[in-house]
Image 1: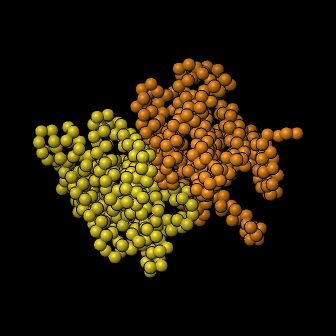
Image 2: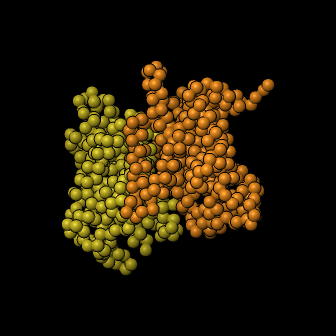
Length: 340
Length: 285
């Protein structure tokens, strides 16, 4: 039987996991699939949707930022392109998100080629800062563009009845499953990516771009491909965000803070690892939401929740600059008696 | 109108250059970008504000205090955070100082509240002189520009005419080589963080003369500082000076013609265009 490559990689990688890791994976998978029926609150579901949403975006970031080593802090511009494509096509022409989301991904890819081609002349810090600047330029343009309601933002039109076509429902359970499917597809995609040609090419470029070039790798093309993947992830996430929150404005979907959060979750979890972005999001999203709901409401405590949140980030950085996955690897090694 | 814009642009540009100077000193010595740099500026501003309201000190007189408090923060940051992170990949620099940025913003949100603060009385606060028809010179902005020039002069002197400055430059050029020559590079790193932070603290004190103070004020200026440093070339002091003035001029003159909502758009767009032609900045190598 001939299996597609992504499936072969998936089966091989799942088989090669250690027994405890397999157990953890099964438990987490079952929990994710059954979560809405475990009697947890609607707030908890909302946090889980956020977690899956940010994991998805951080997984996408990991292609260019992690494996490619090109620290992009402008992902929010692609989130915004996806969100605005879906929203405006719905507002103007009543196009369902099923059709507008791919258009958003396409537009984001086109935009990423336009800016990526010159941006990849830059390296290291120069690249990171230029991506912030590029995203800020686009944000200023969106904030003053009357056709898309400028900085006032756009409300998505409500449908009378729940509709699978328009992905509008009375509860957030169907949206949870929609996001879960996106998330699982994202994990499978990344597993293909890291095992396939492009993933290896990018890691070679990251380690030593001169050596990679001498092996015949077209550096710019490899980076652009990965950047387009990250942009498509972000745009798809943006489309989901728009239909989930039913309101978008430039501040919400294209702020530098959003770009930073996406990069932060992947970096904190462990860049250039499959599980890093997911672990980063699994730590930071619930921490942020639960601390926020526990302390954020009280005037006298404002700021304390995010102080704790950011203190944890700094502690991880000091203990293990490679992120949480690095810490877990060290712990695992010491359990096995110091053997590598 | 144009003359007014050029004058204000140059003076604001000098201030941008001063903020960027702190960033570029630290980068020059140890190739580290501090994303919390804007919050160091905030510390300088808050020091000036509280010295003004509690002690009745003029913001210009509290420049040494602002420099000192920012320098202490810088040394603490190096000692407790950067020292450990510098061994890791570049990614660790980013997320650790993102963390620091969020931490400081919320620390000040918790202790000083989210309301906008403004220094109300001082030697140059709110004062201006008319130079001619439609040409008004804001004294607080003038003071900022003059202080920036003096600070640049001092840093230039320090780096070119003192032993300690030459040791810093040697460390910047080749850390291992400097160690072999008997320079204690670890001390130089502390010094770079102290000096770089003190410089941005000075900028905070003069900025407090005419700008609102609130916990996320640093975000506005840190992006300009990044653009300035990248435009001038990371680690280049002369580059920061020239790029700062250029950015100030673009911001104010561009804002005059295209509308003030686009003033930063033009700055970032120009910066992007320039670094695409010169990927390491105007003065980088």
